[in-house]
Image 1 (cartoon, one colour):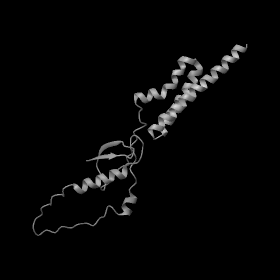
Image 2 (cartoon, one colour):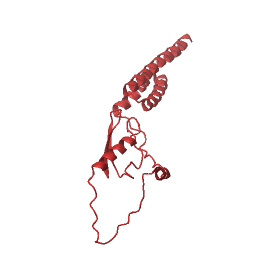
Image 3 (cartoon, helix red, strand yellow):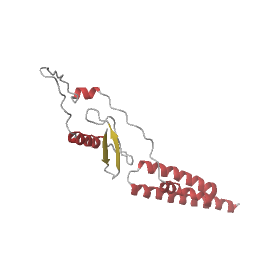
Image 4 (cartoon, one colour):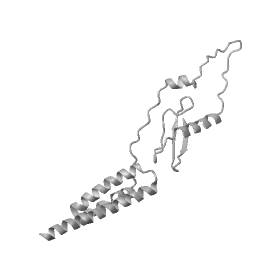
Length: 171
């Protein structure tokens, strides 16, 4: 097993141990934060580790015996093309931290103020916030977009509540 430590372009560091196949990764790896493929970076680290490894000791043989070496090039393109790519292990969606969960669910606070209207607006905003949080890679934009969605939910609640209140006051 070779320890591999990768630093992604987003700044996330992740590490694992791998048993290389033909001096390369046996499967694809990705950054756990942004999902960028880190297989080539891992292959480079494996190549460095293998180059720095001490050579294997010579096998002693009896004098007068011949050593027959079969010629086999495992790195030829034909051989590599015949090997199907290994499946990418699925880790599932990344769990959000507690403060991210609170930020995402902030619009649900409208339930206390506006009941069903606030619950509907807050639930809609919470669902949109989850989608935006999963699909936006830039952490600053995550909070900007979800903050705007939360503000829009509050504005929508206010408009709907004012409209309903004005209708009830007319009767």
